[in-house]
Image: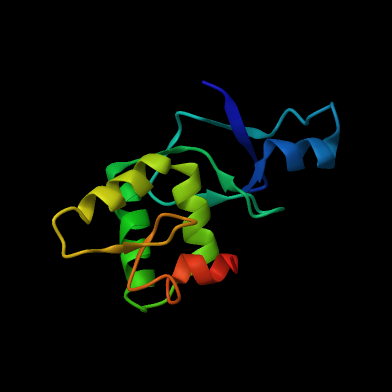
Amino acid sequence: MRVVAYVDAGDFICVECTRKRYGDTLPDDLGLVFSDSETDTPTHCSECGMVIDETLTDYGEKYVIDAYHDLIAGKGGSAWVIDEWLSTWPYLRKRLLEEDKGEQEPVYCHYCGARCADEETCALHVAKEH
C-alpha cells in the first residue's frame, strides 16, 4: 500500500503536485489516499489532471468501460481522458479487446489497441494525432 495522492481542502492532489506545493514539509491536516483506496469513478489531480491510481470498484470499472463504449459510439467523451484511464488500468483495455473476440473482423488501432470502425476514425487514434 502506497500513498498515491493527498486530499487538501477537499481537492485530490497527486504526490508530485503536493510536493511542489509544500516541499518536504507536508501539513499535518492533509488526507491520505492509498493505492488500495477504492473509487466508483476515476479521480484526477486537481492541479495537473493526472489520474490518481486508486483501485476501481466494480461500478468504477463499469463506468470506464461504458465511457469507452459511449466514445466509440459517438455519444461524447474525451478520447484523451479515456485513454489515460485505460493506461492507468490496463486490465480494462485488455477486457475491452477480449470483448471483441467473435465479432466479424474488428479493426484495432495499431497505436492504442482500441477497437474502431477503421484507423482513420478511431477516436483514440485521432486524438493522439499519430
